[in-house]
Length: 199
Image (cartoon, rainbow, N blue to C red):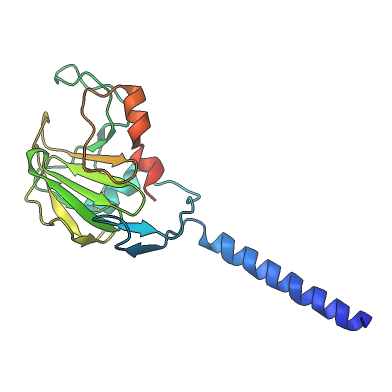
């Protein structure tokens, strides 16, 4: 093969390789989804882990539009004033009663649990649970949009010492919230820290 032609081929192949690598790096953290491949939900086509995690303050701003204090964190022990004997499976925000609660992710509502004021949203990988709400504004089957769709309002339904939002991430597709009697091992097996998972 002519040396000039060979050199040109090598340059082209090298350029294609570099472009592919740049495109792959640029896609890290993006999850592409399609509807209907999982019962009552949708499946992911690409599952790449994002490089950064959200802060408690930024998550609060996404959900409420402003920063509210965290009153209980993932794996914290419940206060003695409650009847809960296990560890906390999510994060609690002490937002005022009747504050609008917006979805922290894109996804689809798979369950409404009125007894706990709960909305279960499947994002294609895991299930995000919002609890203790009143005035729920979505129904099963609705698609929700990150930071836009109002799910309901802060309340105190279920086991609660006062108005707040409980946010929990269950691994995979789940229609069950974690009981407050769950041990640390049980929580770590079935749950994820919301601020480590939600991007």
